[in-house]
Amino acid sequence: MEYRRLGRTGLKVSAIGLGTEHLEQNRETMEDVVRTAVEAGVNYVDLVYDDPEGARGSWDNLAPALQAHRDELILAAHWGWGPGHNGDIVGAQHCFDQVLARTGNGCADVAIIATIDTEEQWNDWGQRAAERLARYKEEGRIGHIGMSGHFVSAALRAVESGQIDVLMYGVNLTEHDSAEIDALLRACAKHDIGVVAMKPYYGGTLLNYDGRPTSINPAQCLAYTLSRPVATAIPGVRNTEELRTTLHYLEANERERDWQAAIPLMHEGLAGHCVRCNHCLPCPVDIDIGATILFVGFAQWEGVTEGLRAWYQSLPVPASACIECGDCVERCPFGVDVVEQMRELVALYET
Image (cartoon, rainbow, N blue to C red; front, side, top):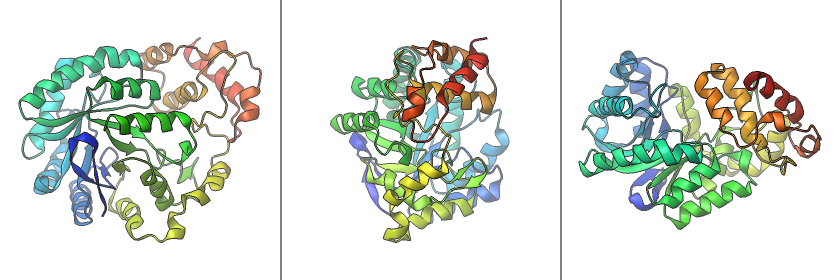
């Protein structure tokens, strides 16, 4: 295992970390996954969780696995994750305290302010969260403060604020030539912010799209992500088999790790799927096409909730502004029917 410096935290983290969000909810699997990870040298564990009181069964299973290896682990616990917690300091604090109580020593090495995706969120909820977490840091209950997000503008605002030490952001093959991501990673390097690369498989889509396996392998995905200035890549695994598939990267040969060979495979395997590469831009009416199309997927996953509708309404330019010029469709290397996607968004969120 390779270990890298997590920015100005000074922590030495494993190049491959462990994401726990999608772990199968039984004790045997959780204990085996954590044990297998530790034996392979994994020391960075990301805890995205439901409220421990509402998901007591899964926490009763995961907590013993973490406690058994606590001295060997660097734990990152998310603050404000879950329905109703963003904007609710009392709820977020209660949930976070429950998680800390189950880690084994009552502390987290990193507290991640979860899912800050707009500058407005950072200026409001992000500031309140950072202020509260600063108290936890003074009390010695957390070591460092981080943030996770999906949009460059909000991430840049946090990085340049001086208030975070760690940024959790998606870094994967889909953005292999993204000037925006390059600029974000340069800003992190300038401010010595440790980068935790989430979604190295693009939520699994790089490996399996629309129920069909692609020709891209996990080692190629990880090789690309770890070629970037990041400290650790955090794939989310469901069980030990998926973890071992990820850990194969450590012994993969050069051919298996050749991420450049995956680029044409990606364009072939993900035809029709927006990967937010932004080749469609500029839009003549300034729609942020990739960011806007994301809301189609959100609606498919969870339905159009009031919170999701409010988030959509915070976009600077809505889908209904589309003039259907077709320039974006011609530019898209993945063959996405952007105009039809805009129509679907209007039907979902604006009618």
